[in-house]
Length: 171
Image (cartoon, rainbow, N blue to C red; front, side, top):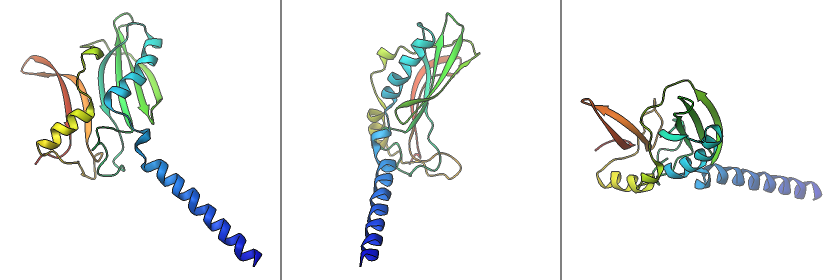
C-alpha cells in the first residue's frame, strides 16, 4: 500500500512540475512590446555611451514559436541597435525574456537615429491595424512564425523615411 501511495505521489509531483514548466513557456509574461524592449535596452546603451540613440529594432524569435506568436503585439526576443556619434559606432543589444541576453559594440558608422520620445504607436497598436487590413500570421516553415515588427529608416527612390513594419502573410 505504501509503495502504491509513493508511486502515486511521485507521478502527481511529476505532473505538477510538467504543468508548471509548460505554463512558464506558454505564458506571455516573458514577452515584451517594441517600446518595452527599447526601454529595457536603453539603460544599457546609455551605460555604453551617454549619447546613445536608437537606430533600429526588430523582433527575432525562432521559427519554432507557435504560429500565433506576436498576435498580441509582443515577442519574446528583440534585436536593437543604438548609435553613438561620440564613439562613431553602434551597439547591438538583444532583449530576450525581458532581460539583456547579448550586447556588443559594432564598428559601423552612425546613421539615422530615432528619437524614442517621438514613437507614438507601439507594436500592439500596429498589429490591430494590420489585422484589420487582413494580415495573418506567417507560418512559412523556413522563416520565423507569427507576426514580426521592425522600426527603422528605409531608403526608397533616394528618399529616407522612418518605417514601422508588421510582417505576416498578406491576404
